[in-house]
Image (tube, rainbow, N blue to C red):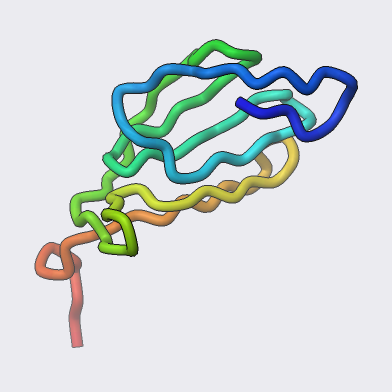
Length: 97
C-alpha cells in the first residue's frame, strides 16, 4: 500500500494469496478494494484485509505478463457505483437470437 495523499508516505506490504492487478480507494469509507488475477476481491481498511470476496470470473483474459479472471476495479464515493471486469466463458452465456 502506497499513500498518495496526506502527510504519511510510508509504504506497507499487505500479503495476499494471489497477485493484485488493480485497486480503488474510497475516501468516504476510507477503504481500498483490490482485484486479483484470480477471482479474489480484497476489501482493505488501513493495512488489514477485512473481507475477501470472490468474483464469478472463469476465464483468465490474457494480457502482456499473464492473465486475469478479475481484471479491474473502479468505484465511486461511498460505494455508490462499482465496476469490476471479469473474464467469462462465452459458451456459458445465455445468448439468444
